[in-house]
Length: 426
Image 1 (tube, rainbow, N blue to C red):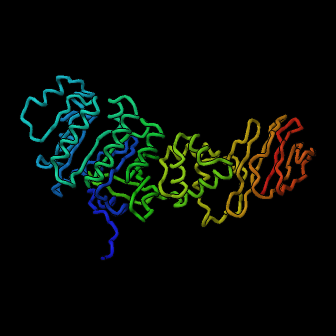
Image 2: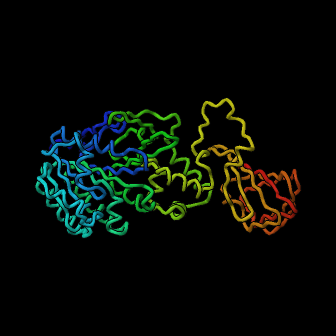
Image 3: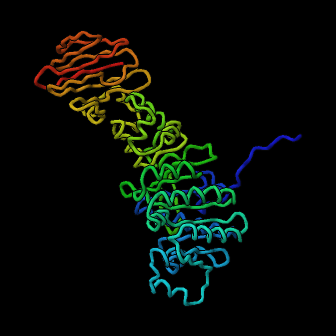
């Protein structure tokens, strides 16, 4: 009996050499979701993919929910040819409401093969028509769904769009196609995007920051290289895309940092998932660096964990003053504990953690600041505070310290008229 060879996906070009180098090309069978911000010129990625597919003599099925046939063909001018392009028009009888302006396109001889879906609001009808087109094509056809957002607008709810995606994504995989799916990230819930990322093979995030365009992979199935998960600046000139490394890169162990912050905050994966409206599975994959969060998800996680994005992304290597911690910097690393109690991160690494705790005047906290996991030294800097441990209450004055080995306080109380400030180290 022969040795079984490992299964390897065939690769094709995206039409953009810089992107191919970054992600090790597109893989046959993969569904590629593009989460885009306004102003990212995402069309250029679609156009290059379509042009490359036609150059490869492959059929391209372009499914349009947001544009009329004439608008699409003007947009594709010079990037597609009639022999290889099939346009599925879900716009004219969808968002176009059978307006005469759009219907008159069908009065003149067609150069391209355009299939009009008469009732795109009916998901079953649309799916049957799409399947009938697929059945007449050879394997390896390419697909572009120009707007998951447009589907949702027409079908009225995310769940319908999600069900269609969960049906179509595995089908296209089995047909050995490559399909591009575009969604406007701000138009969809975090839950919807997390669910799509779980099902699809590849996800890219396109966004704008300080007048610069960025691309970052959020998921890449079957690739070992992690460079694509860092943000990269891209530029467009004459329809061509160039991609370069950004100056500030997100750490490849972002998941590890977020996991550390979560555990130190006493949150389970489910607790954090509930706070930011994603699944525990998404949190698990993120913490294991199997996927990367979108910018919006990352900011939400930071808020839920009580830290600033800058704190999570801070680079300490190579800084001549990495030993210096300024109070001004600490004030930006807030972890809300309870009403009237704030905790600020001073140092947080594998070997040592130090925090500043501020208790408001007259505030009482009926627990410790966080779960006690290892011995802690707590030093009172200013104010008057009482602490209750193991049934005994003691009052602390500035300069007093507490060493907690394995029993956590059941109460902290500010006994003075001003804020009290403590430093805790573990």
